[in-house]
Structure formats: structure tokens, C-alpha cells
Image (cartoon, rainbow, N blue to C red):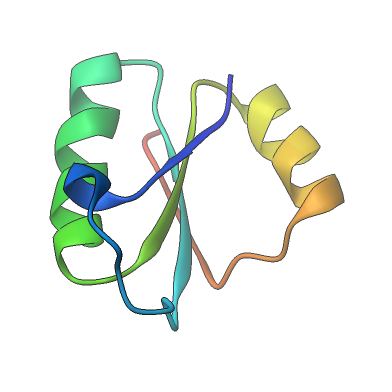
Length: 68
């Protein structure tokens, strides 16, 4: 499942960098995503490679962070 969130529900500046975070561990995705959002990045959280491929069919991202 892919999620895109802004930090704290507050309006945020238009992000310059779009990042996909791919990890099967929800806590890792949340922590990494939170840190990136605090730095005004648009974050897409993906649970699996399949979710990432689906995301990439609809969106362009600048960076992909994943575990192996």
C-alpha cells in the first residue's frame, strides 16, 4: 500500500524533492518518512517492490530509498 502524507496536517511548502521509501517494516517507513517530511520533501511510503512499481506507473519520484 502506498501512502503520501504531509507533516502534522499543516500546510507545507511545495516540495522540491519527491522520495519513495520502500520497506516492509511500517515503523521504519514511518520514521524515515517523518524525517524526510520535516525537511519539506514529498514522501511516498511503499510496503513492497510491487507497490513501488505501481507508484511509478502514476508518479515521478526523484529518489528511491529501500532496504535489501
